[in-house]
Length: 154
Ligand SMILES: [Zn+2]
Image (cartoon, rainbow, N blue to C red; front, side):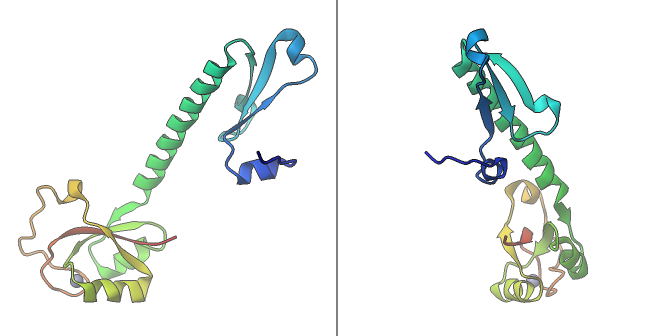
């Protein structure tokens, strides 16, 4: 078990909550749970020590649900369609660009060299019902084989 003395250490190690049991907590059979995923007064709650395992389990489920909502909103806010190579360059500076792509290694290599972005996937949902009928890759001009996401690796 790692012991941290500073609040910053706990945040950096992604500990989702902490429990405080003070001098009077045992007398009143209470504890304070402090979430690390939210700020302000709402992050701390006084709870009964009776049934605290179930309380903590529910808290962890709530934190996980909230993290999923935040991650989904972040992802959706950073997904954009690009119609031109210039749009792709701009989008990949801070997000994921969906483009009609030829699927060739040469084209991918050019994109990676010039933008540091690489092909992530041909997403099933976006390609369902998509027709390459006359659509060309905005990078090389060859016929597109599907819609692909491009993004920089972290
Ligand atoms: Zn291409």
